[in-house]
Amino acid sequence: MEQFCLDTPKEGFIDITARVREFVRSSPIKQGICQVFVPHTTAGVTINENADPDVVTDMLAALGQMVPKLSYRHREGNSIAHVKSSLMGCSLTIAVEDSDLVLGTWQGIYFCEFDGPRKRKVFVQVVGA
View 1 (cartoon, one colour):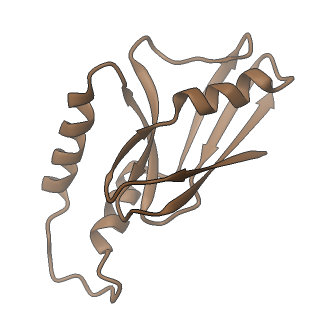
View 2: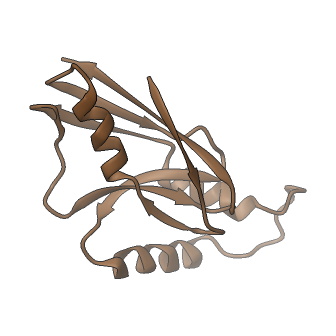
């Protein structure tokens, strides 16, 4: 298993496709799966379009509408980030073929920050079929 660190903004999506792809290409595994895991409760990971930056803007706006400001009980005051993280999820499984990620033409892997700025970790593991 490999890992890398990110310095994140207060909130936002960071395209990590190239970094994950680098781990896959450097792995001896030619065919299998790539597991991406984010060990944080106020951040997540997702796959979505990476061609038009407006998609990320729209995703953040939609999440902002779906997770309203309520009288949350969590004392740290970041319950909204916890809910958004749970909606996105903390891991992805991506097929690997010919030492590369199997992603659609417009797909990219995004680290989702909801409680930054912070220094965050991303774990990547490639397993053969």
